[in-house]
Length: 394
Image 1 (tube, rainbow, N blue to C red):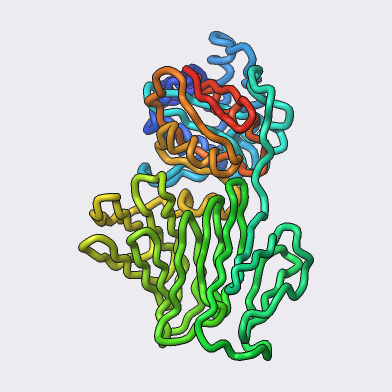
Image 2 (image 1 turned 180 degrees about the vertical axis):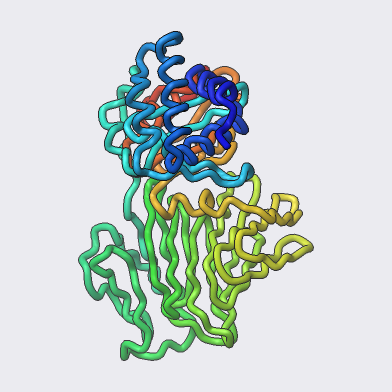
């Protein structure tokens, strides 16, 4: 049974007027998705769209192109309301719908290049995106700048050989024939603002470090546990070893695992330490409590030591940075700016009242700062850059 044409007409009118509520937008996208397999519904939508286009034209928007791209081969993903909407309906254009309190950002992953050259008119300085940058501090205190180091063997740490792989990541090869150290030798890998890096630990655990983060770990795991210390944010794929639990310590929080995939966000300037589980199970402790997480759940530890469990966490948002994207789910402007600040290595300040709008959607991390700001300015948030300062204005 086809949806009520009058309802479809209303939804498309709301869409073109940028007045869709979140629920209305979900309803429209569901109809669009169904129309891919239903010729009658597709025809009905086309007729309604043409009527709106004829009677209420919107300058600067090519409505035929947008309609055509709505039915492109890229699928429309509609997730539960508490999750981010991975909008991909306008594959040849950037479309932003702004309701009373929520700005939805539409940006398909395969269309980042279409942003080239688009930036706010008042942006004179620009900032390039971050990249693979990190410094490795060895047990003796010496440093290796990894982004400029050659590929291949870098050094020996006890019985582990430290290698920079052709992929750019750092790996520890245990049992490499070096002298057995008398004590535990700790190494630290640290990314600057505007940097990220991947390291394979001596036990085979893979770690992705986000910007302005560090990981302290032993050059060889000994004893009854594998313990590392994190500042900032990292995604872990822990090598399974039931006899040696893996523990991540960060700012008063401990995550204990045997073998699993999870993300820890423990930046000092965030309100909570967030641990999000993708696979396996982990035990998160902090303050006076602890909780066992199942896949899809998130533990939040606030600065007062209160531990909360989010049963239906947005796992895609939690690891978007690892996959090369900014992703937001009803995030305030300060949340958005903190991520941009770390990745583009800028200091953010605010002039005048701060917008109460919330943002949802995704944007690539591989574009210049000005191109990200161009998207945000479509929802009436304005900026200027002065050197390394990013100023948010009314």
